Length: 172
Image (cartoon, rainbow, N blue to C red; front, side):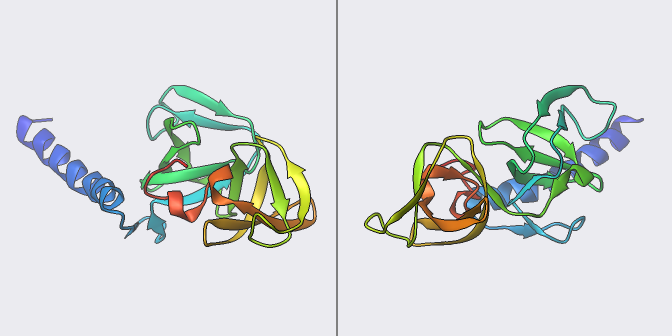
């Protein structure tokens, strides 16, 4: 590859990936030309074991083995078959697109009382433990409605990772 070709490829990659990075820094989503979905966004692990790789191909080294079905993952960038993601600990890896699901989940980052209504005064339904994965239903006024093992209730947004308000921070 000539120096001119290399620079052209580098410029194209910078423009392509730079738009997603710029969008996340300004707090705006962009629509991916690959998935036609907004980036950034949350999705979840489709399987109980998913490999996170150093780069966007099976030729790249596995740097993480995720072993938690439904773990919420923040999609940062996309190629045709691979997505650059961030997990709750802040680690970033590439995951093959067929390993992820659009099912919305959240991860409890601390013990929390699930309540009947979105208020700290509402009756408690269950004590949920750190590390639990729940299905996300809705979020409003700093509370998120979740479903766990047939029960539905509300928890403070500050007790979870995967809430819509965390799209551009990637953390609590």
